[in-house]
Amino acid sequence: MRAVVLGGTGAIGGATAERLALSGWTVDVTGRDAAAMPAELAEAGVRFHALPRTDASVIGRLVGDDTDLLVDLVAYSARDVRSLLPVMGSVAHTVVISTRAVYVDADGRHINGDEPPRFAVPLREDNPTLPPAGDDVDPYTRDGYAPSKVAVELAALSSGLPVTVIRPSKVHGRWARNARSRHFVERMLRGDERIELAEGGRSVDHLTAAANTAALIEAIAGTPGTRILNSADPDTPTAEEIARAIGDRVGWQGALDLVDAPDDGERGHHPWRTVHPIVLDTTASTSLGYTPVGRGIDLLMDEVDWVGRG
Image (tube, rainbow, N blue to C red; front, side, top):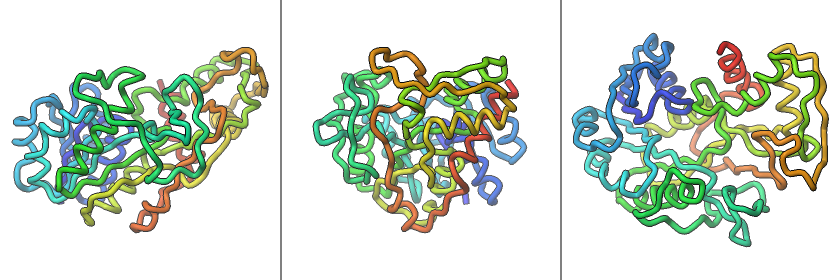
């Protein structure tokens, strides 16, 4: 079995490439910079190719006619998908990574909006989403990102090809481009005596371990279909539980200050702060035979260790 992972040196891409390679797959990954290729992937036999995502002809030559699985982590617009449709048509199964940011609540509020959404949790895949963005929208902006991902999903799912769209939540893992645990790890390692947590540390913002998403991709690789799947960890720790677990891991001797400061939006701010819980329903994923690697609170320590090593 052969897989090509577009954008395969970050958290989800790297975890997927490593898992498949260690399971006996031939794996090729693409990226912009060979220096970003984790040594662990090379040791597992993964091959790196410095290819631009925008050059469909070059990607097509890499994919060839012997690829069983194409995983695309760098499709940010419908145009990106449309340009790659001939390549997608040559593989048995394509997985496109989207985001939970596409969801809207009953009042149309969403995660990247000005007002915090209040979702009916757990969120299922059939929950309403934002309208899709047009080709003139910049997907690399706060306002444009989620609508552009909706457009990505629609372009992929309406292609008539076997495509699985995966919507992860707050991703964590080794090689994460913006590791959220860094917020705590660096402060704890430098010896901060007190760290404040807004919302009294009660926030629940569902985690997604890259290792669990990789396990989901492997589980569905051999069963092509046209579908949308949430990807999130089996547990839903609070921000306080996350912070305490990180502190225990790095040997921090300080104290958490659980604050409720409604008049000061910045006090105690942290990467998992939410006013209302955000939890994804993963029933559809587990019904396809996927089994999580482990709890998010435990797998987060892979990222913590990686960040701690600098």
